[in-house]
Structures are given as C-alpha cells and as structure tokens.
Image (cartoon, rainbow, N blue to C red; front, side, top):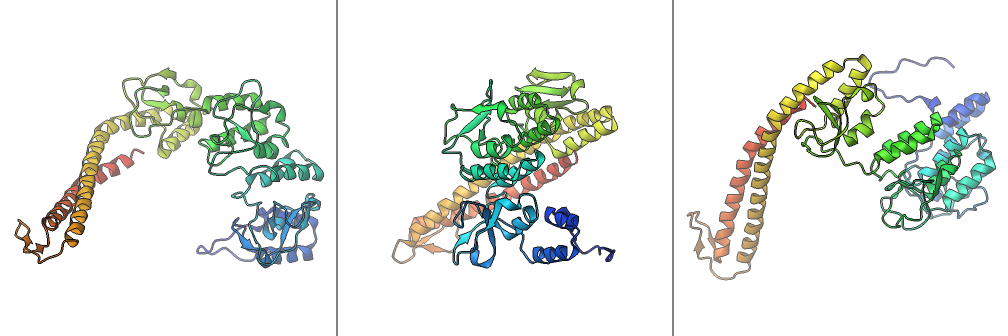
Length: 420
C-alpha cells in the first residue's frame, strides 16, 4: 500500500480497517481476494434494519434453520461479521423469495442480542457449534429492546438476594450471561409480573446506560460482587430535580456543592474526590433547600477537570458563586414563567371561545344586524358573532403582553447559561 493523498478539509473520510471483515481479509494476505471483497462491500448499502424486498439482495440465516427461518442476515452484515471468520460455517445462504419483505435481524435496532452473543462468544472463545446453539436459543425467545413491557418468557434476577426493579429477560440471559459464564450468579425470578416489567438491558429502561457500563466493568475486572452492590444502590433512585431546589432526599458532596443521590451513584461514585466528601448520604439538604451541583453536563465536566487537575478548591469556589447566582436568578425566572404560562393559556382559551362563537354566528341565518359595541363597523347575524370578534382582539392583546416577560426570561436564562 502507498499513501494516496492528504485528506481535504471539506471531505469526510472513514478508516476502512475498522471493519472486522476488511481486517480478516488483510490478515489472510490474499490481495486479489481483498480487492474483490472491498469492491463488493462498498457496493452494498449500510444495514439500517429496515424492511426490504428479498429479491434485491442476498440473505443468510443460521445453518439448519432453512429459508423461512425467524432470523435473517443481510449481505452487509454477513460480510462484516461472518465471511471468512471461524463462525462462517454456522451460516448458510437462503435464496431470495421474490416479493417477500425482510428486515435484517442482526441490526441492533431489531435484535441486539444476536450480535452481542457473537461478541461474548469471541471473548470467551466459544466453539462454532456452541455459538450456533446460543443463537438458536436467542432466535426462539421474545426479542429484547421493545418499547412495551414483556408479556411472555422467563426473567432472571440475582441469586440469593434479588433486586426489585431489576431483571434480565431470557434473550439477554442467553446472549450475554450464559456465554460469559455468569449464569451461576442468576436465578429465575418468578415474582416478576409479566406485562409490567422491562429488561434492565433494554434501551427503554431507565438507567440502562449505567447498568451496561457497570456490567462491562464487572466482566472486564472479574469482580462480580461490586456489580450487584452497585445495581442495588442504583435501583429505585429518586430522579434528580435538576435546576429546581430539593429539601428532602439524601445528599453527598460538600456544603458548597451538594450532590443528590441519583447523580452521586450515576456519576460521582468512584471518582477521585468521592471518598473525601464530608457529606456522605445525609438525609435532608444541608442549609435548607439546595440544587444538585452535578445535574448539568457543564458542571460534570468541571468536576472531572477538577479531579484530573487536582483543583478541588477552585471547583468548590465556582460552585459557591453558582449557588449565589442561582438564588438571584432562578426565582425571577420561575415568576416570569408563571406569568408567561398564565397569559398564554388565557389567550388560548379566549381564541377557542372566539372560534366557537364565530361558528355559532355562522349557523344563524338572516340579515346581519348586530354591531360590535366597540364600533368596529362589522355586523353579525347574532350576538355571539360580535362577542367572537371581541374575544379574538383580547386574545391577540394577551399574546402581545406575553412577549415582554418572554424576552426578559430569555435574558435571565442567557445569564444563567454561563454557570451551567
């Protein structure tokens, strides 16, 4: 290979060798086959998981499932994940059926556990037939990642001491837990009420990002007890109130930077200064109602920078000034919001009433005789028609009055944004 050219600033390039399919071809050392693979792969569209007509592409399935199998893989995913890999033997091409619509099940939006199982099998060096059995099992279970709760299937929770509001569906158990050799830590959860429960690995579950990060950390470090403890601490946490003040709850941090229970466990836990915080789970906000010091992405970045640069005093000084600025700005912002909301809904109600009266006037027949008291000169078939015009004018005036508080609030929010 030789250098082609410098990348122009206006162009967006992507590294080819990030793709496992290209990497496998490079490692084989067959240049002609690599060129052929590259030409084929770049002629294919990216897999978007959408339904397409099978007559327009090639499809693969798991060996033994047959052409009408429940699991289908598009040519793009086949080339990227299976072609010339040690897993290639567990797949077989299933010829297209003209006019039949299919979606690639290997796209994470359709069934994330299929590709996840391959990753887990690679990490644990499972044999091809072992992976094939795992994939068959996953294909026979209800797919995870749905927006509605589960209506069927089995659920798993920690063995010995289950955690409320936590559970893993059967598909995720077969894709992630069993291949990684972690099944001894789980047991059936018969107390789960189907129709009300989401899998803790589902993207539609609150806190799924943190659960997954903790899971990956436990797998990489081999310390499973920490994962269970952290999950217990994270379930049923009250949500952070954000910029609004709280009085109850449990708090961590410092008097100048109080951290709510949710943000401590989901963000600050395990950081450099976590063990040095003088406030460790105290009940009730210190010094009266407070806002959480780490609810915004800006504050979280400042905190991480302080950990990295060992400048805690500087960070706390900023938080102290931020708390003062919040006390100056936020009550005024809330008052303006109340005015804006009250004016807006009053105007909406008048507009609705005006339209209703206008419709009523339109259904009245006869010579227009009623004139609006304001002397507009417009005549209506009935009194509701005159009232409709008056209400419309009042609604327009209310909307005009609301523009002032909106501009004032916008200015205050711009000032507060400097502290976010």
